[in-house]
Structure formats: structure tokens, C-alpha cells
Amino acid sequence: MHRYLLLFTFFFLTGGIISGQKFVNEFLNIGVGARAHGMFGSVVASVNDGTAAYWNTAGLTDIENPLQINVMHAKWFGGIANYDYVSVAKKLNSANKSVAAFSFIRLGVDNIPNTLNLIGPDGTVDYNRVTNFSASDYAGIFSYARTTGSSEKLSFGGNIKVIHRSIGSFGKAWGFGADFGVRYKGENFRLGLSARDITTTFNAWSFNLTEDEKRVFQSTGNDIPVSSTEITLPRLIFGGSYFLSKGNISYLTELNLNISTNGTKSGILSGNNFNIDPSIGFEAGYMQKVFLRAGLGNMQTVINQTNTAERDFEIQPNVGLGLKLGRLKVDYALANIGSVSGVLVSHIFSLGLDFVPRN
Image 1 (tube, rainbow, N blue to C red):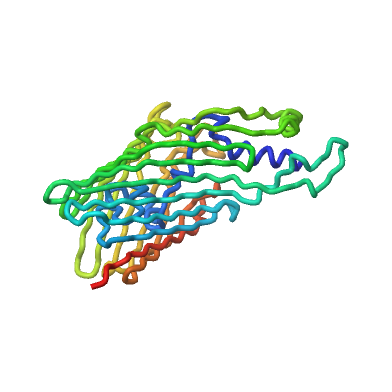
Image 2: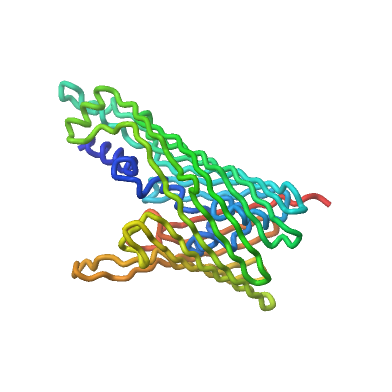
């Protein structure tokens, strides 16, 4: 039983290699920042802080202060998986605003029991042979953005991603990719485009299993993983936002269209090799200090559990709150990550801190 548990965990974590290329580097699709999660990721046009290095690099040019730090921590799957994010953004030039940033992301499952050696060759069970290992995904993102023209209405940026994935001592992968973003800022509206994985991001896996471990895989009817390469196909995200302010009250609405070639028949606009996923975000603010947010996304048709010949339409809501206290920004979102029940169970917190120059 313990051997099957470890093997299930192992193949669950390496599912992108064994079952195909559709869900490669999924940890990079989760998203960063509680503000964005509260708006269901509909921030490609409106993002204006260090998290823009992830959502749309061009948005980094909205950073006003010389240095900004953003952090986020979340636990998912009942506390099994830990998600950590930190970014540092540095303003380089005031004229033709330019900003550089570095972001670090880790998604990890720690203290996984390695029970491959639990049962000895003679059939005896020895729990002293059980060790622990971690399965972790890492990404380092180097970003740069700047405005163009005297009006500074148009900005663009790009990043380079370095990816490392590891499953204890069993397997490791290195990968590289790049994103590009552009944004136009009007008086009350913004238009944004984020081109993800424009170079076709790849991961090269290598595995290191002992002969005894290979025999356990074979004896339990599992294939022995071999070195292989994963590929993440490019996708485009278009965004348009509208901002309105009346006295102390402000309103922002954004619509995003996520266009990919990984078609899923459950999407509302999809085919075998094409998919459009829309999402909508809303943010209401009071004196630009207190914010209430909501988002709708994950719109899809699913098989009716009562009558499999019919399909039902589903849509997922997210909600969030924000508070800005001088240089400190605190955001919270209630979403559905790491749950298959459709219930909002993911509590996400993030912090942002501006470093203001002394007068």
C-alpha cells in the first residue's frame, strides 16, 4: 500500500511528462498577488505594481517610487502544497520611465514519505528505511519595461524565465522561456497585451533511479520514467480596463481574453487546438485606500452528473479586499485553488511595500 502511495505521488507530480504537454509548468499559471486573484486574474491592462512582472511586464512603468517589494504566501490542497512569491522592482530612469524587476516563485510539496525501501528483499517491514523528500517547482523571472514617446502613454516590456523542477533525488528539470507585454494608457481606459511563452518554453527532464527503485516500479506495473522534454506553447492575453472616479469613490472594470492553442472542449469558445477563456474583474475603491474586488472566470461547460448526455454551464467567482496604509499595501483574496469541490477555499494574502526617497 505504501509503495503504491509513493508511486501515485510520483506520477501525479510528473504528470506533464507522462500524459502529454497540455499542463506543462502549471505552477506558472496560478498567478501572483491577492489583488489579481480577487479579480480572477483580469489585470493585464490595469496592473500597476511589481506583480506586473508576471501579468504584463509593461505595467511595471506605473511604479512611482524608486524601489518596491511584493510578497505572497499561500497553502493549498489542505495545506500540503506551499506557494511562495517575492519580487523586487527598481525604477531606473524617470524620463522615459524604465523599470527592472526580479521575481521568484516556488510551489512545493514537502515531507513526502519515500516508501520505496519500506519492505526489504526478505519481505520484512522496516520503517527506519522510510525517508522524506520534496517535490518543488521554481521560477526566476528577470524583467525590464519602459515607456516610449513624450506622452508616455505607450509602454512595453519583456522577461526571461529560468525554471527548475525537482522531485527529490529522482528527477530534475531545467527550462527557459520568455514573455512580452505592451500597454496603452488613455485618460480613463487602458489596453494591454501579454504574450506568454513567445519562445515556446521548454523543460528538459533527467531521472536518476537506482536499480532497486526501478524494480519496485516494474513490480507494481508502472513504467520507469525516462529523460524527456516538455514544451509550453505560446498564448496571448488581451485586456481592456475602464476607470471612473466620482468624489472619494472609484470604479475599475477589466475584461481579459486568454487565447491559447491548448483547446479544451469544456471551454465556451474552444476546439481541438484553439481556446478562448474570458474573465472579468471589478474593483471599487474608497479614497484609493480601501478596495473591494470581485472576479468571474473559469467559464466552461461540464457533463451533467445526473444525465451524462447533457452539459451544464459553470462559472467561478472570486472576491477580495485591499487596504493601502501609506507605503504598505495589504491584499486578500478568497478563491478556489487546489479544490475540486467548486467551493471557495483558498485564502490568499499578499503584501506590497514602497520605499520612498527621503526629502
